Length: 148
Image (cartoon, rainbow, N blue to C red):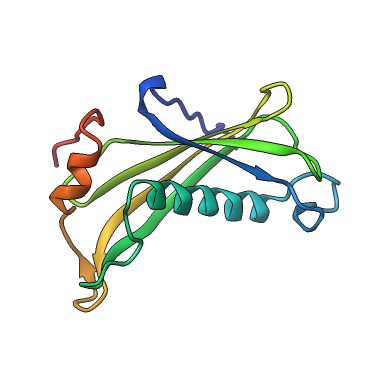
């Protein structure tokens, strides 16, 4: 089976936050469970958006929804370890793009995982995908654009 390979441009990370692995995040193999990593990635995404003043759902009922997610695990993480989540953007298009994550150990900097989360803007009242608001795009002028 072919392995997933994720590679991200260094200059596309805009935000860093730290999260600690809780004892409840540990699986039967005694390391960070996949479902807990997904939850931690979601928390890092929420912090990133908040830092840039982006509401996950705005007053006009337009928000961001996740369309897909890919994660590669490179090293185990254990209870009470602090992890650094670097968060960025790439491949913006008319409707969304990819939020990217690099997760390392705070102590030593070992690379634990890489992840990407595809997203689109969604109008919850109309129940359909909607074009990316221009003010979102303007917050990240250095992010590459993909023509569709």
